[in-house]
Image 1 (cartoon, helix red, strand yellow):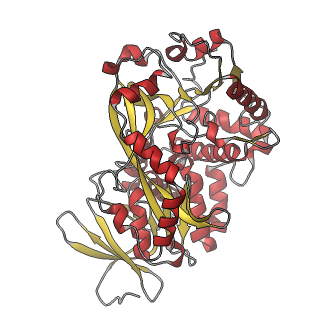
Image 2 (cartoon, helix red, strand yellow):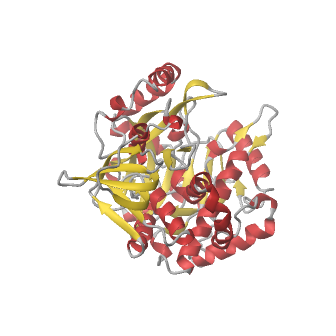
Length: 502
């Protein structure tokens, strides 16, 4: 425990990292506990610059409308859509909270961060088509997915995705599903809007400040050591710390010393996309089209061709192509991976290394690919793609969680988003990756419930006001699904601008 003889600056809450997760938690706390003093530390010069930045992710509003890896075929041939339902309901929570912020003038111009965009799944071959059709038949019976369309008609597919289908010479049969209610989300813009509002409230923003260490005092509060750009250090004393610094979170979790953080490791994977800014090409595609991952490839490798709106410019992204860097952040250190290994997680990390040889081989193959090899992967989607129209950009770093699990044994690689919190609820840490940003509101409400149990019961009426579906299983309430779609569509400008391609 740290001795508190030296004077520290006191604050109620500290948020580490100025990304979408901290912005969401800060916005929730401002609505639920407006008198609390919140202090934010960001090591970069502005908000939303790492994983939340629009160039560091695909901008998919993950609602399980097109991601085939969120559904699986059971041994009896039926489709398990448990994960798809869970993710869709969580995304509906996000849309409701964003709508509340817009309707109450916390943020403005939702078109800056969210736009309607069809989500499609595309497969080739008889067996894959059988799976997709069965998947559609199962999902369309659920009110969350009732508007999903299926087609294996070549002419219909040409209308849905002309850039992909019109120049195709292969005779291999194809099929697709399509949901017009999908979205393209600029999480960087959303993060900046939320923090812009919070800066004018009881929230103190500190840019170019790095959290060096955090220790719990004998009284249960946290002493947080922070260094500014000039190398000067200041101590802060707080009742609650949220570690939401993306890939940088693991090191801070380890420094906290909480038992819940022991035995957890991280494996960094960088992403790359081929980007086309040529207007005449971009105008031929208006959707996010997800395919199937190659056999043996990890879920993060699902290929997709995405329309993106960054600012007012329409762009196409194809990928992702995996890369490897030992950094945990794009702006991190080459020592990040090495320094994350300690006595508490070394055996877990070694076990993961032995178990994930296939992933290691896959990453090596990806790293060694030339641009032309990447273009060949793109041409499976866009047959006449020209190399000169596409450039390779490096996206954000993901740090996949490695931990011991009861069912998976030692050193199991996790591909989702995880929250680690202390038993006393004074510190919480966010780890992992996709679907991350899309489910940020649900994840941060989970943090509030874990860490503020005494206040949470008092907050629930306000949560219900902000998020009408709070506490309800949407899949069991078709009328509420319709109501929420209508209300969020109007608030976020999705209804009027909805472009339907039949």
